Length: 138
Image (cartoon, rainbow, N blue to C red; front, side, top):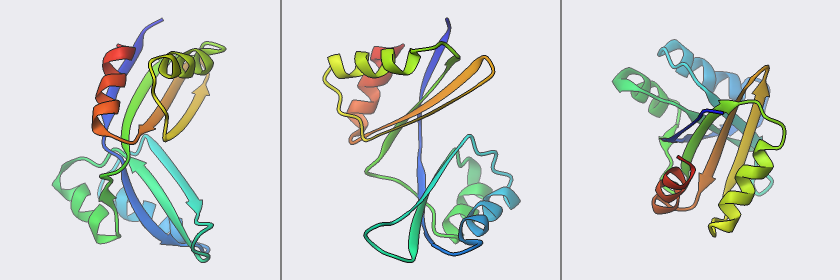
């Protein structure tokens, strides 16, 4: 089974926890031509009335300007990788076991399988860990 592993820049923005809060952020990116592969949004338990949204990719000057205009910044504390592969039962377990055996503590893990394809995004605390994980998984 072919496994494609690459580094990704993750962008994050605060948002109001209200109807349309997320839609406003995503619409600004869509208007700039962003073709997002990954979106995670959630409420903030530490700050009621707010939330956070993470997206990737943001490419080119037009998308970067639009992203920054609505509060997105490339994260400096969350370092991501993207894994694209076939949909194989147990792959997530195999992957996380391999990373654990290599000594990695994951900051975040998100994955989805549709039909015969699977996409996984993993976040690490440092750029060095993300780069090491890419080398390990290739």
